[in-house]
Length: 125
Image 1 (cartoon, one colour):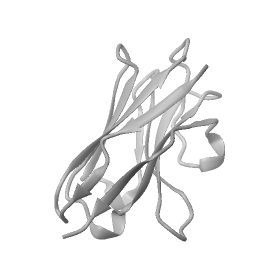
Image 2 (tube, rainbow, N blue to C red; image 1 turned 180 degrees about the horizontal axis):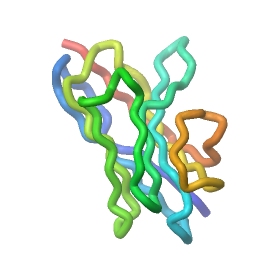
Image 3 (cartoon, rainbow, N blue to C red; image 1 turned 180 degrees about the vertical axis):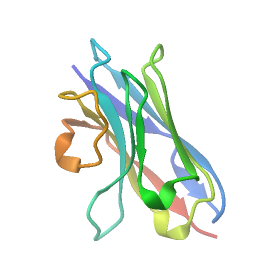
Image 4 (tube, one colour; image 1 turned 30 degrees about the horizontal axis):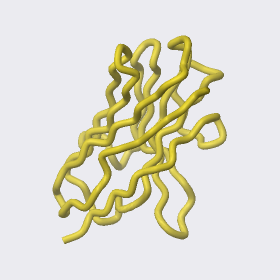
């Protein structure tokens, strides 16, 4: 059974940093991609970053480029999202998701088949 579990959310001041973790279990090959998405109240879920587990290629939303870094540890089944210089408008529930039909990264919600339960990130002073 494929399962994704996020951790690492919390309350941080503007300009601060957090590292989110996504533990992926049940995957029998590296032919898939992991995406990070976020959803604020009343707003559509949006892609933040994604990574191909097979070749490590990545994608970032324009507004997070240079501040967020996605990485993977295939041996541990982990994907991380390092978030620096956080802004109040980035307050949201952050989700990781798996696209098991492609090893290429996508930022479209509809491409993803499995989702974690989400972790709250609050950026506030």
